[in-house]
Length: 181
Image (cartoon, helix red, strand yellow):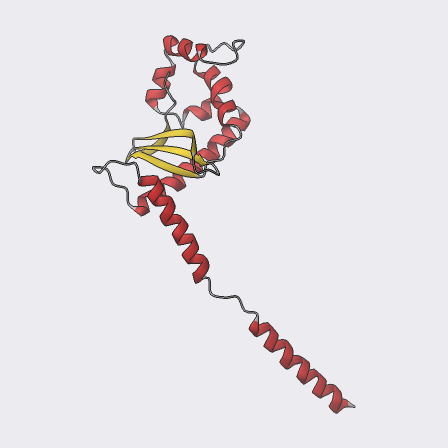
C-alpha cells in the first residue's frame, strides 16, 4: 500500500512539475517590440511638423513628454483645488503679462459663450475658462511646433487631434502658454 501511494505521489509530482514548467511565460520580446513600435510611431507623429532647422532626438522626446505629462497631472490637482497661486507657477510669463492687460481680458470676455460670466482678471480666466475647458481632458501625445514649443493633444478615434495645452520652454522648463484672443 505504501508503495502504491509512493508511486502515485511520484507520478503526480512529475506531472505537476511538467505542467508548471510548460506554462512558463513566453519571452517579453514580442511585447517589447510592440511597445517599441508604438513609441517609434508616436515619436514620428510628434516631430513630423517640426522644421528642418529644429531637431528633437528620441531621448529628448521621451524626456519632454514625461515632463509635460507630469505637469499636466500637477495641473489636474491644482484645478481640483482651484489653486490659482499654484497654477501661476506653471504659466508662461508672456501669458501672465498678456492676460494681466484689461484690454485682453475684455477681448476674452467677449468670446465667452456664457454672457453672464464677467472676467475681471487672470484669476477669473483660471476659474471660468481654463478649468472648465480642461477639466475632463485626456492628453495622449505631444506634438512639437518647434524645439521649444509643444502641443499636448488627445488623439481621437479618427486620428484627428484635440489640443488641450500649448507649452513653451522658458528658462529650461516647460510652461503653459495660454492662447491669445
